[in-house]
Amino acid sequence: MKQLALDIGLSSGPTLQNFCQGPNEAVLKHLALWVGAKTSAATRSPVPTYIWGMSGSGKTHLLKAVHEALREQGAVVGWLDASVAEPEAYRESWAAILLDDVHLYSSVQQHAAFNWFVNAQTHQRWVLGSGDAPPASLQVRDDLRTRLGWGHVFGLKVLSEPERRSVLRQAADARGVFLSDEVMDFLLTRFSRDLGSLMELLDLIDAYALRAKRAITIPMIRAMMENS
Image (cartoon, rainbow, N blue to C red; front, side, top):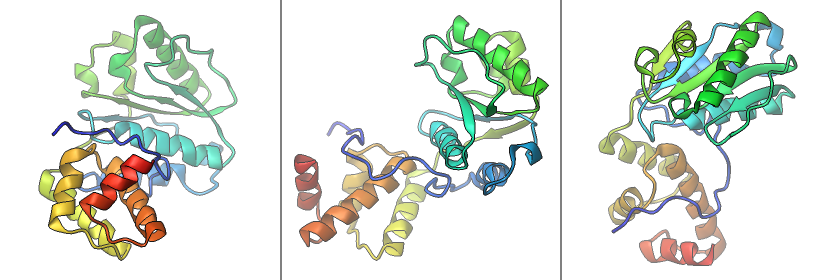
């Protein structure tokens, strides 16, 4: 059966708390420490951070989670991804700049990213970037590639099928939700397999089951999808 994307009304967006770390504990701790809790931007280290990994490893989840955490603290952040055709000029008011999926940047976006990076370093602002390869292997302009490798570099590992199953089982148990092996197989084969999406799907299923007063079964999940 064709795998389905999870686009059926998610209950919440990406956060550091709902990122399933698996073997990626180090990068999660690093980002959580930097974001802190209502910490002044002036006390944060301006050393840049770069995260790389294959599609589905959680790069965008982490960048969006950092963006949301800073926004909740009242910070203004510069964001650039491949969908931004005309990047704006750097703003001194930014507490940090986030450069998502730099391997997809056009020449215009690479120019803007380099300009943002230089200005961020001048004003002692943090840079958090992501891409599909280590800095040295990125197919981007040399000066941008060099700067992305200046500071902390983390490679994300994609969780294996048994690891995803184990994390999903633990998350369900923590909610007091029973998932049969049949339901587990259905979730892992019919929906997006990145854990951030699976955790949000679990929240959605749990809430729907409570409202409908039904046990979590494949027919119930199908009914939820039809009614969403």
